[in-house]
Length: 287
Ligand SMILES: Nc1ncnc2c1ncn2[C@@H]1O[C@H](COP(=O)(O)OP(=O)(O)O)[C@@H](O)[C@H]1O
Ligand SMILES: [Mg+2]
Image (cartoon, rainbow, N blue to C red; front, side, top):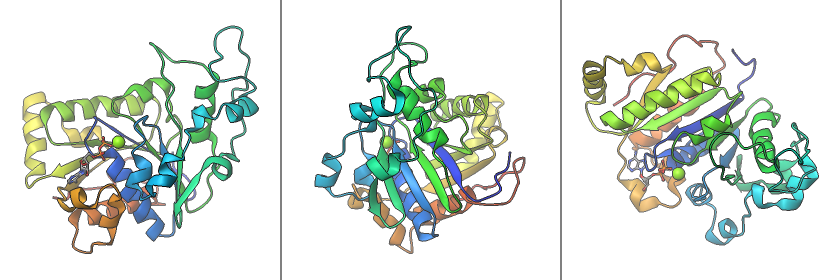
């Protein structure tokens, strides 16, 4: 499945603390530098993304997650938040083209943010008005040339159960090089493929020298060649300055000597590549 233009919808997934939010913010900055307008969507109830993108504290604190905008949920779906079950009738495909204009926050030039919120649910999928709205926002929002969506998810794979990212063009699975994390990453890749995401890339974060060797060892121990499970693998080096720069980690992108920033830029270029190369890796190991 190849898109005719350079727009993209990418979901960023992985275990907690592996670097998803940092990567999302830095990717948005890199894409903005390339003239691409990004809508970064925060699905994590911890709401770290506004700060990571450099939004001042007062503005970040004023944000109300979309799922808590009860009037908007009702206006769009026809049902009050919390409505579910047999008695609830709501639109399954609400028109959400106005959501960015009404609730999006412009953080910087070409960097927009939407804090979506997460709907807690027990067990399987929850067909409730808030989820229908949130799913519609990321799935049906019209994208033009030079526009893309980056969906920063909370830790774990629960969002795959909701199929929140169905219809997305890319899944970036962020991991470190440990055995357990790589095992989880391979499961995430399977789930991403099950919901039909065509390009699934592994982001080996905080990679020390020898990332290649770690993957070789994983293959020997499990019989799984990680590179075969993904359409591409990119290693992002450990960047000690992120700790000094946080919460606004996007500032690393203006440091010309940062290997992390360089890796983010190559990932940004791969996301917007126009070429149709679905069956060939788009990224190579960099360490
Ligand atoms: N490549 C890296 N080098 C050094 N520190 C990193 C790197 N990537 C992320 N971090 C740090 O790791 C911590 C967790 O990152 P974060 O993006 O919040 O993870 P997640 O969103 O997956 O929970 C943060 O303190 C961040 O600055
Ligand atoms: Mg995060």
